[in-house]
Length: 239
Image (cartoon, one colour):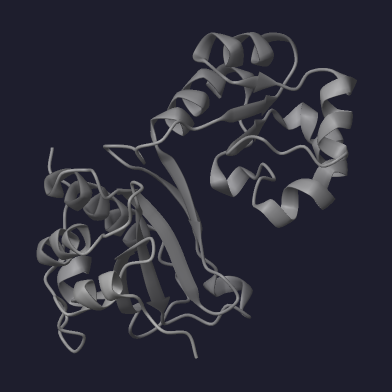
């Protein structure tokens, strides 16, 4: 069994592990218990009251965090013609409109965070599934990453601004980053509120009973802090 270091033990001593904290207090405590030398990521983990084996109980959607993720997002776009032009104008880092770039990805290159494609390019993109799929980079209409050329500018801008995909995994959990420990408490709280609103809207019609069982917020290497799930689900995004 691995032993925790002094810094972790000092951080966890600040947390009542049996308490479900109000959302704002939990976010502030996560920030206060971050002890890494680097700017840690703040993450939310949810245990859902869903059966991931059932097709009608899947959750997959996106949320645009009002204050982003605190990091530069590298966007690759599969497009040609008008879509490629709009992608470049919007600031896409790479536009894969040639066989050379497609071959590079086929060989294993994935130096980007988000991949967006136009529908007409999906025939070629589908052949890259072995590379993109396991890394969560395959464009998908449900995630808003397969868009018509005229919507390309908006899609790239949203991805750059902090557009985050969330989905139910096979263990009935959802894991989502909401920013950095260097963010002030208000920005982290507002990002969390935006996430909760999106999670509520994404509730599948087949969901019964307790939709969200548990919520925990933590930072990279930091202790988990339980959030009162009922209070979290009552949050509303201001403005």
